Picture 1 (tube, one colour):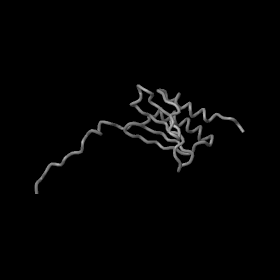
Picture 2 (cartoon, helix red, strand yellow):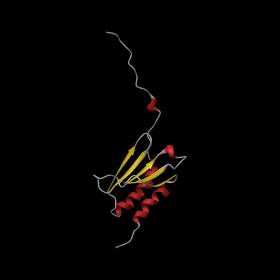
Picture 3 (tube, one colour):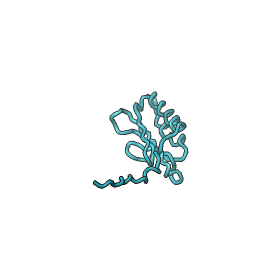
Picture 4 (cartoon, helix red, strand yellow):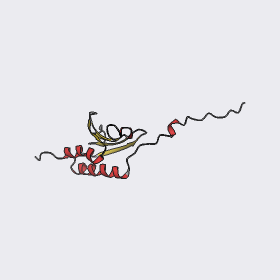
Length: 115
């Protein structure tokens, strides 16, 4: 038997950290989420932290596709904007640098005619 040295895994992925929402961003998102839950529009959410983006998904029911996705993509900071709100059909509803301004598109959906 020969004693060979083990071949290490490549270290290319170690430099890339996960993207996540910070405390202030989560506070802004959860403020809108709380209003929509109180209005009976939303019921569940999910958070994903990946290497290139962070996603906050909003659901009407747990077993459905997300109604909206709030994404944070640091690569797009200089071009199209760090934050985006994406609808169920994949359309980008709003994109920008300021999270409060981007989330206003969701608050407009809360305001509607009273029956």
